[in-house]
Structure formats: structure tokens, C-alpha cells
Image (cartoon, rainbow, N blue to C red; front, side, top):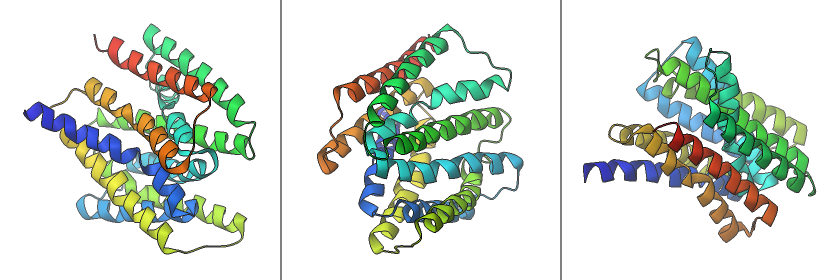
Length: 275
């Protein structure tokens, strides 16, 4: 019963994360939504933990890019495609980990090939629409930034700096998000401050940043990391479901195939590397 409760913690976190794209699109202004999210999460994080370490700054840099570009990509490309592009993170995390002396094995190599094929399919499909290539590039950048964040977090967590790269990173992420959001708003030439964007940003700060990370940490007290990763793989699937139900964003056959390849790559890596 105790194990089931901790699995439910992780499941709840995955469900909450799956609503990021939907909340962003409904918020109306992706730049403002990302800005409110970053500052809200950073303010809450400062209450519980403060860090001036290089690891916090580095992790915050990648999170700041992630927060901003995910919002923009979800608005341009769609919530399902963006969520699955985020899950290409293992490819970039593996590349980044090579700089730390880690070498990918055969399982990782096969997973990376599947992700690579999925990226080609998604790029060809999304490139046909207006602003599709720009949206794809931003979505791809979210996966890259998240992958590098994972690599940094893993590297420093092994050196007893897990809080530095989690709560300690959020205030620095707010600074980076401010820079990118200001550039985006300046380029657009106008700032549309509206309640829906502020509410969406606050929702993301509390229910899609602080709360799910807390639930994940609680769940990992009893649940193995491999099991947690399998549960977490529901996130992009649910994101695609929310996009289809609430935004009528129905994936094409090509995109659905790409989604399946990314899921297979994630599950394959999780299962086979933990035998």
C-alpha cells in the first residue's frame, strides 16, 4: 500500500506536467506565461533553499531556456508535438554526458537511433505548415536544454548537490527566462498583459513546477528510478490527448509513428538498462 501511494505521487506529477502546453496555449501570451511561471517558481524556491553555487547557475541556465521555448513551441507547433520533442532529451543528455567521461552502451545507441528517426519524421511533417520549421526548432531546443539539464543534474547530484540543481536552480532560471522573454516581447513590439496569461503562469509555477518536483522527490523515496521513468513516460501521451480533446490538435499518421518511436526508445532504454 505504501509503494502504491508513492507511485501515485509520481503519476500525479506526470499528469500535472502533461498540462503545461495546454495551459500555455490557453494563457494566450507564451512570453508572459513563461515569465510568470519562472518568477513564481523561483520565488517559492527561495523560501525553502538558496544557493550561489556554479551548479545552480548552470542548471538554472538550461531550465530558463526550457521554460521559455517550451511555451513558445507549444503555441506555434502544438502541445503534443512539443511534449514529444521534449522527450528527445535522452539523446542530448547522452551527448552531454560524453563530456563527463560516460560512454553510451548498445541499448542507449539503439534508443538514440529510434529518436533520430522520429526527429526526421517530425521535422518533415511539421515543416509543411506555416512557422512549422521555427516551431520545430524551438521544440527541439526544449529537448536539448532539458537533456543538458538532466546531464548537469545527474553529474552534480552524484556529488551531493541535488538541491543546488533543483530548488537552487529555479531563481536563476527566472533570470534567464526574463532575458529570453524580454527579447521575444521586444521583437514582437507589444506586451499584452492579461489575466489569463498571469493565471496560466501562476498555475504552471505552482502545479507544473514546484508541486510535481516535490511529488517526484517523495515518490522516489520508495519507487525505483526506472519505474518512475516508465510512469513519467505517460506525460507526452497525455499532453497529446489534451491537445486533441481541448484544442483539436489531431496528430497525423506520420506524427503518431514518430511518437511511438520516441516512446519505444524511452521504454527500451529504461527496461533493458535496469536488468
